[in-house]
Structure formats: C-alpha cells, structure tokens
Amino acid sequence: MDLLQEYSELKKTIDYHMDRYYNQDEPEISDYEYDKLMIRLKEIEKEHPEWVTSDSPSQKIGGTVKREAGVKVTHNVPMLSIEDVFSEDAVCAWIDKVHAMHPDCTFSVETKIDGLSMSLRYVKEVDGKLHLQLAETRGDGLIGEDVTANARVVGDVLQVIDLPYDSLELRGEVYMSHEDFEKYNEEQERLEKKTAANPRNLAAGTLRQLDTSITKKRGLKMFIFNVQDGPDVIMESHGRGMDILKAAGVPIVYHKICKTKEEVVRTIDEIGRMREELPYDIDGAVVKIDHIAFRQEFPAGSKYSSGHIAYKYPPEEVNTELLDITVQVGRTGRVTPVAVLKPVYVAGSTVSRTTLHNPFEVERKGVLIGDTVVVRKAGDVIPELVGPVLERRKGREDQLREFVMPEFCPSCGAKLSPAKEGDKDIRCPNVESCPAQLTERVISLASRKAFDIEHLGEQSAIALTNPEENRP
View (cartoon, rainbow, N blue to C red):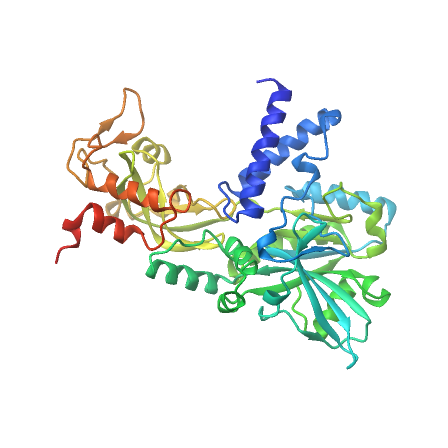
C-alpha cells in the first residue's frame, strides 16, 4: 500500500469510528487505538500538507446534530475540541512556546471529564439574577441541539445563578457517576436488556432522550469547565472566573493555577494519581492559558480551541485475582478461553471477565489460575488481561494451576479441533445441534444490529434452544 492509499484508508477508518463514538454512542475501538490512528494521520499530513482538505478528520469535530433529539441551535461561541498530546515532553514544549512570548503567563491545569459537552446560556431577569434560558449540545461545533428540557432535570445545572451580570454562557461536561452507571446496568441485566458499555456513552444517550423523566431518573451530573461569554470581570482570568462561579454555587472542575512547566507536570501527575479515587471518569488533564486574552495567539487548527492542550494518560491498569479460566462456545463454534476475575473497577466499569482468545494466547501471556494479574481497558471499551504479576507468586506456588483446554465441547460433547491445520482457534464441529452455538445465533439475530427484538435476551434464547437447562 502506498502512502496516499494509506492516507485515504485512514481517513475513512477514522470517520467511521468518529461516527460510532460521537453520534452512535457505541465505540468499537478504545480511545488509545483511536488516538494512534489520529497520530498516524497527522504524521502523513505533516509530510504532505497539500493533501489536507476540510473534510479530513484532523480538521473537523466528530459530532453531528441529531434532529430527533431537539431543535437545531447555532452556538454563540463555537464549541471546539482540545488538541491532545501524549507525553509530558510535549506539554513542556508547548509551555516553553507560550513563555517565549509571555514569560509571566500562568496556566490552569484541570481534570478532563469523560462525558458529553454542553453549554448553558443564562440571561438576567426582573429579579436581577441570571436564569437558564438555553442548553445546547456540541453537535458539529457550530450547530448543536437544544436540550434545555433535559438540562433542567440534571441536578448540577443551576436554574438560577445569583451574579450581577446581564448574561453569561458557560460550557461544561455532562457525566454519569460510577454508582449510577452500575445501578443502570444492574437493572438492565435484571430485565434482560442491553447494558451500556461505559458511563460516557450512557450519559450521551441519556441527555438526548426525548422523555425528560428518563433523564431525571438516570441521575446525570455536570461540571463547568469554561466561561464561553460574559463580562470582563469573569473573562479576564480563567482561574478567577472559575472561582467566581464556585462562590456562586456552580459545580466546577478541579483546577489548579501553575506558573512553571515543572508545576504543570507535577499537577498532571497529581491528577493522574487521583483517577482511581474519583467517583467519575476522567480521560486526561487539560492545560489552559489562564490569561484569556493571550489564547488567540496560540491557535491549534480549525477544530481546536486556541490556548489549550489536553494531556492523555496512558491506559489505566489495575491488579486483580484470576479466579478461573473457563471456555465459551460462540455462534460459529469457536471455543474461547475466558478469564474469570475477581471484580475490579477499571476505566469506567466493573470488569469480572475478559477473553483470552485461544489457548496459545493463554500460554503466551504466561498466566496461571490463582495469579494476581494486570487488567486494563484502553479507553473504556474492551477489557484486556495484560499478564501476571510475577512477584506475587512467591510462596503461593501450590495455590496456582495451569489452564488445560478441554478436548470436548462443554455444551454438546463433540470433540474439539482446529478448523484447519495451523489454525490457533479451537472449534466445535457440531454446527447443526450444539446448544451453545444455537443460543448464540438466536442472541445475535435478536440484537440491535440485526432484528432488534426486545426482551429476547440470553435466558430467553437458552429456553428456546436448550429447554433441558430450564427444567426443574
């Protein structure tokens, strides 16, 4: 594949995943994998700037306006993205660039909440206070959706702010706490309905609900992270503006003012250590020029806000115990080893199981049942067992055991074998009557991507394909 062809394919791939993330609220790859695609795209565009057009993913925001979710609204102030960087060296280089022009410039370092961006427009009424007039989603950055009705039932959104201004426009992030996310998924499982992949997706879908009672029930929350428009007293210094809002009772993101690049890096590291303790997800730390008038001197492209960068943390990793390795038979007969884990919260959801793909992968990772293992979810999508924590094995050797791939299908008893010579996947050949394969096919047909049959979940599929399991 030549470079131009690679570039063309990259654009198509990124566009597809932008749509899955921003519009469908159903990402198929992790943030980490998406970031790698975007980094490669920008590398090619840097080498060949003549190839860059306005429809490149590097030049546009990923969302579109969903007409069914509300009335279209043109933003008073564009709701742009923030350019990502992936190393502390890149953060320091950016700060050096700013300090070269403004040696006394300070920076606000903040938590980057993983949710859905929304702006709130307030107008002074006869009582002299600011009243909520309009709430908008980001959409494509220039035009969003009117979600005022839903915003009014988000607990953290103040209906009235007691500040002596004629008008005020704020921007923040709507999110869902870990606790409310787990409650939702537990209820979905009880009803045999589809669970949500992560809090960000669920928050995005909830804010776009047409029924405000559903939005209210799911308990969305919001942090304000920027003043979009307002009087000079609140628009001169970002940090001072945030403090004014906080004093007025507005929930704002965690932020800290830093003078040097060393302080900025130290604060980024502090926020990184906070991640596991926070009751909500963050996906980075934002560094902003505090003196707002300076920001326009540091543009980052048509899709990015000037005077900001976002540091993206490496994938979050946690330790837990590998309780067992079982096998699962899929709809095509593929028999997959599955790690059964002591439940652990990582990157937005509780993980208790993760695929090990095939017996060769189990051997490659070198894990033993009973091990302490490292688990990560690069970007909140697919959990992955990284490997064992070898130092935790000392003195516990007699408690550990190797995984042995079964010779026969656990569902129908057919002898297992690779589909063809050299194939790493082990399969059950009983395509016509293996209960597990039939069950998985029914589940697949009933899924949203196929016939979208409500209330036909796993238990109902088992009852249809393997009634013996349901007899008393």
